[in-house]
Image (cartoon, rainbow, N blue to C red; front, top):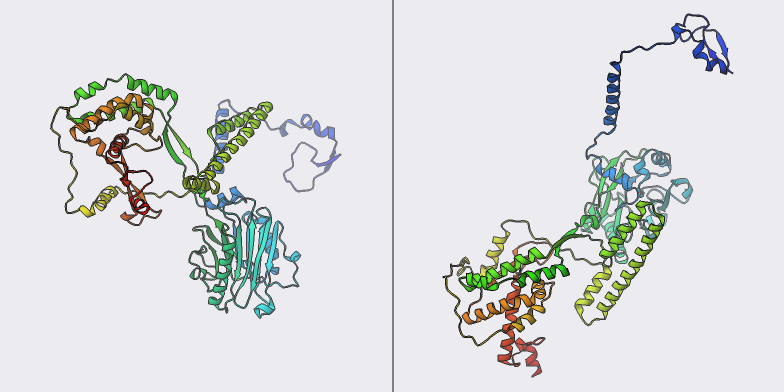
Length: 628
């Protein structure tokens, strides 16, 4: 039964609140109230048919306008804080709240309120409070915060000579880290410190752990003595934990740690007490934090500082390297060989007016055939690529992902098992390769093995992006010949026919073929763009034409101009370029010319004999004198 207020009769009530007669309705009366209601109380809506399109258009506009208002563009004003909320506790650097509370117990109610109302406060990885004014009479249960571990270093009356005040307290978020170790505590009249070693659930590859150092230096303390003591502590911890960054924070008053330790950067650039910056945060990482001031806790005269991490791990800072390589497949090799087999080299010889033109035409044609027949492939390499992760494993990983998306459980299990099996095989192959490098009597192989084990990758220096750098380097490299230096010009050679002359040295085709097949395919091509891979693959096809060019060069006592050209690559000697002397000129010469020189060298060895130590492998003139 329900009691519903109503007015019997035909006239509707004029006032909502008034002396109205109470009527009692049953459930059945309420269900049939529409049929028993008079017609004048039931409203009738009569609209023309043309009204409905307008109604739908207005409704759509209202919905779209509400969606537009909901999807408001915020710009980039809160970019760092948005990233902080998205990452949660998986941050490259921990987020921290720092404050001088001047008595922690009477601030606990406000701290509990901040944990419930401010999400960034609850997501903070660590909170550091100085001047806690705690003593043995205050238990840990009285200052506990839900979801945080507490570590405190109260002021010792005997060590500090003071009965009250001081004290440091560090709260560590349980969702960020539970493996916390107290390294050391210190209390003296000039310095109070607390060092913690935290191994979080997530940390970048370059950091093994994070070490927090809570510091409080009283206003009347001897700042020089305090900084010397703190610097000794920091140096000692750095030797024990070389892969762990130190985050030194607290109330330093007038002291500045970077005077004693210049490599540490101060990240708080806003006033923390009136117009003075007394609370500091130091790390060795540049641009690690951005400090945002908040309202002070209680009646404290120091504001609360929120340290938002802005550090980007090395993996994200390192751009992927894009490499373009030639795919020397069997099909490409056969196509290039057939292309050179059907080439009539006499056409180039008859149309050339000089040896330079003949050689230049032949090398250009070979380079053109290589570009047409051999396909290229571009791929990206990332900084975190595993050395044993091959292209086959990448395909199996994609097959596993496709099987998971298809929903076929049996197919997914087969793909997963096959991927696990191939990973184990790839790791065993890579382990055998490292063992072979270590056992080899070669310092280069051993050094490469150490680099692979330690994942050591030297940062490649970058040259300046300067359009005038080439001219500056040319002037710098020719500075010793400045008086007699003249610009290199190629005078037009007179059109002469190739006439045979007599020569004491004759190069045979089998020797050229042997030298071409000994080429190292990982070497770079010269200015003529004839690669060592092309010479090695097509040694049988290219040996006749180059034998003719080599013999004509010896007969005419003239080296073709394309063989004498070189590409100078300025290689930086160190990462930070400070001058032109920091570039080392490396010349890339023609691979064909190097083969020609090796053939001539064999002839010189046979003429001069084995008494000349300068032409022998692994032998020097000084070693010859010592042996005698």
